[in-house]
Length: 141
Image 1 (cartoon, rainbow, N blue to C red):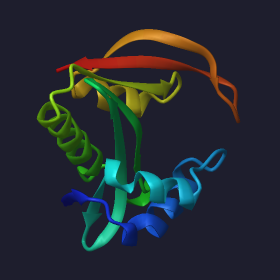
Image 2: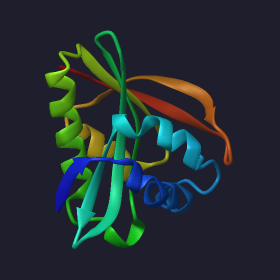
Image 3: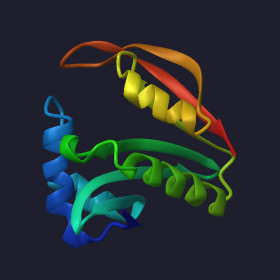
Image 4: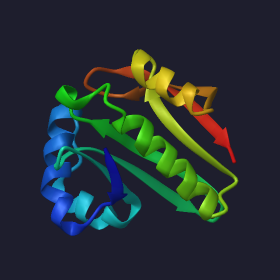
C-alpha cells in the first residue's frame, strides 16, 4: 500500500471513487480538481483505491472525506490515509482535526476512534439521501 500526495492526474479516479462510495451526493470532478492539493491517495497494487481530504484554516483542521473502494477495503488503505493525514496535521501545527460521520456508519466510527478521534457533538439531519444525523468527532493534536 502506497500513500502519496494526490495530483491532477488522479482527479478522474477520485471522482469515480466518489460515485461508488457516495452515490447520493458525490463531489463533482471540478470540485475535486480545486482541492487536489489537500488530498492524499492510497494505491494498492498500482490501483488508486482510496483518498482522504484535509482542509485547514489557521490552526483548525477538517477531515472532509475518507473513501476506499469497497473491493479494496480491509487492506490498510484507510488506516494509512488516517495516519498520513494526522501526520500532515501535526506538520501544519494544527491544534485539532474535526470531522462529521454518519451516525449509522459503524465502520467509520470505529476507524476514527482507533485513530484517537472522540465524539464531541451531533448535527441533527446533517446528511440527506437518506436524511441522517452526523456525529462530530475531534482529535486534539
